[in-house]
Amino acid sequence: MVKELYLVRHGQAEPQSGSTKDFQRQLTSKGYQDASKIGLYLKSKEFYPDIILHSSSVRTTDTVNRINEQLGIDLDHIESSEEIYEASVRILLRVISEIPAELRSAIIVGHNPSITYLSEYITGAEIGHVGTAGMVHIQIPFTSWSEVSEKNCDFIEYISPEDIY
Image 1 (spheres, rainbow, N blue to C red):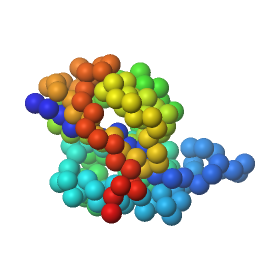
Image 2 (cartoon, rainbow, N blue to C red):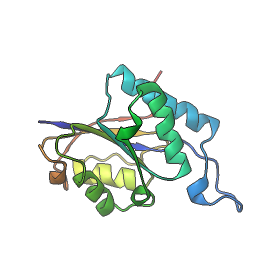
Image 3 (cartoon, one colour):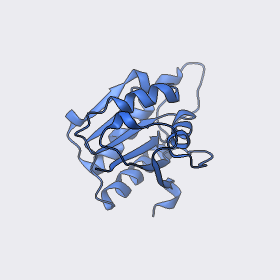
Image 4 (spheres, rainbow, N blue to C red):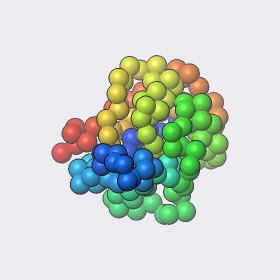
């Protein structure tokens, strides 16, 4: 059974200032709009993930909330994780490997450069740079998420909010 994975970078966030910690940065109005576009895109494709995993930072949480305004996923299927904030590819691979095998689809919302590096690592595709609110669609040709490894998944497409009308 093929599994579907979307790796999403959070929407555009306000610049870091002396009074705001990176973890607490909020989305800009463009960040909110782009996250809504991503949700609308997924809804148009009738993609309703079994689980959404995201960094616990403010900007990724807000991105997930905006996406979910369009999808209406039960909140029991959305999980925040401090591990995903500033995660390495190794940590993100572990997060993926811990997704229960019976789940067929997932979205992970995180940060760059990890989202780009992980996308390229598991697909072998040259993506270059996942922009804010950018999304990489990947198919996993295994029955278990724990089988995801270097260059053994299929790159389907990269979607930027600018590509969505």
